[in-house]
Length: 252
Image (tube, rainbow, N blue to C red; front, side, top):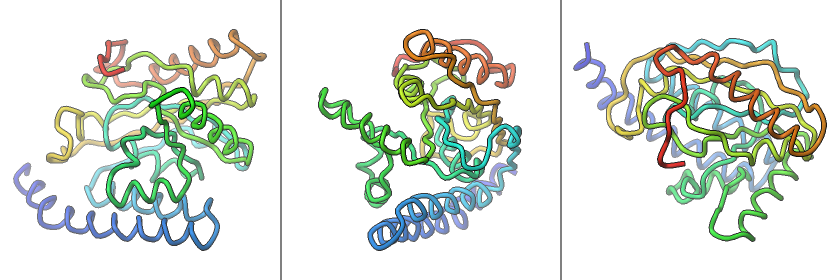
């Protein structure tokens, strides 16, 4: 079965994926240039991600949709297991949002241009002024009623376990007094672990757990620590037993 699945990936799934990636990027760039950036900055990527997961024949289970309300802005925070985290959240969360992403992703040909055109929040750590610009953009995005998705570990895991959470996303939520909605991802590490990027996709089910939003209890350091710790606990609680517990990530 492994041989058949790999042959399918190479001769069927990969060519289709490359074509829809190019089409999605072009639609995003052109659409954002001539029309509503919120629409074209989300829907092509949403459909692209949904098709990619289905193309790879991966079963998906989403739990907890009832925990989020239509029309409300959230700071979504998730564990970062692997490359398929992007496809799972983009394709199956079913909420219009912006990504807070590493600067390096914006340099990928075609995809990077689509990210910039759709005004994803690109985290540039090359100097204090660029970091400030990143968070200024994030504030404006959230003030407009949009949600944002952040991987607060800042790096994918090497082990499937979680590392520590950085404070940036929680400081934004605190400043704007927005609820933080934790997301637990299971299965992405098994499908394409970081050590094997852009190699074969391993067949494995994907699960996205949407936890109850964590609302602010005040403003300032105490609230930031509260929402950060509660988010960490919630995400950890739904990880499969194999990946429970903190393990240091030297890339953080």
